[in-house]
Image 1: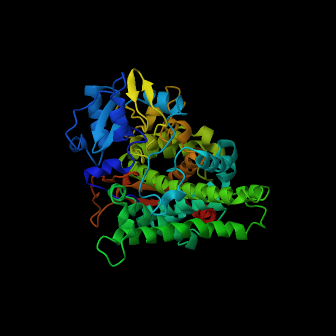
Image 2: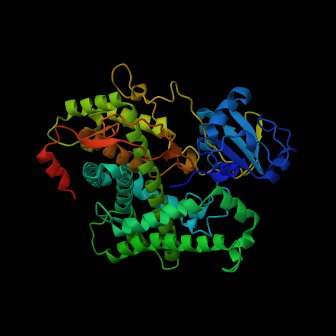
Length: 511
């Protein structure tokens, strides 16, 4: 997971998928020559700009405060980076959706290539390579195609609850195993074992240290001093080069080992994974185009694995925290399941239309503590004018939504007076906007729904108690970063009282 960063350079981490846009300084200078003005904003200090005024751990709080003074479109300077803060979903949709031809590029990140992270196509610029990667990804994960993964997602969800019942104290690890195993199945058609799977471990070994090293400080340092990657190993300061080399080796193993697994098992015509399907398509291509196609396929596969591992596990942590803090929500959700499904079987996707409150719980989990408050920035391919304001080439964008009683977990906000789900769905914006919207959003939504409904049907998640039976109080803490998630917190997870031996046998049968 991405670590907390206290230095003001943390602002450079990804600056918001939901809030901000980064400009190169030279573009700002050129913009002064334009008759249109930049958006209003706080007065920057010389050299450092507005960096000292921003909450580096939760910058969106600062941006929200500035909205009252400067409006929905705000210009900010952070060190040598020019930023536009967008505090309106309407403006974000105008720019990212309606003008997506302009706002679909990415800025340069100096750490990607040295640390092996150029294999993640979410970071690469808008062009032919990105379009090919996106097309390969979309062919497998578009909504009408992704339904084929539903049986596997239900099976993995049942594995998850068995693990939770057997070892509740390791709930965070079980969430990570669930997210990784679903991704390995959809991408490589690899049936990971429920615990301690060797290929899943390769992924974890690459991602945890890899994302830890992918910090804004390193990106800024390498951008300013690229010679650090050429220092001899014995020289002071060479740790950056050694870390980059080790990260690249781990990422390479994560990319190639599961890919080779698919190649070695291509004779199995039942494979329905993204890699297997596209390798079959590649066989029909001419020899000259195959190398480029294979590279793009590896990038698409790796991007799917990284995105799933980070966001799915983090969202389940948010859900579990909500169940501990809001037991009435859990009871109402369980009552809906018991009323619609009964207590003698487990939920499936066929039950989803009959369980609106469960969907409301999922929507509120997305909204309550978004796990990607600061995402990978968009960058404009050309200068633009919006509402009379000049937006130079190089801009990146996002948006911020306000919600009544935003700090409270209230699924009912998504249910109308007739008990029907409203049209307001956070999934419409939390996965991004425009051409850079997450192409795997339908599969991610299905994975989370299957895990949440299966947990609600089978286990109680409640406050932990000490040896004297007293509830252990705690204040939730979040680990900030590109992906924001709750720290491990005390909780009790146990099988619901009606989960009898027959249902447990049904659950364990998947292991």
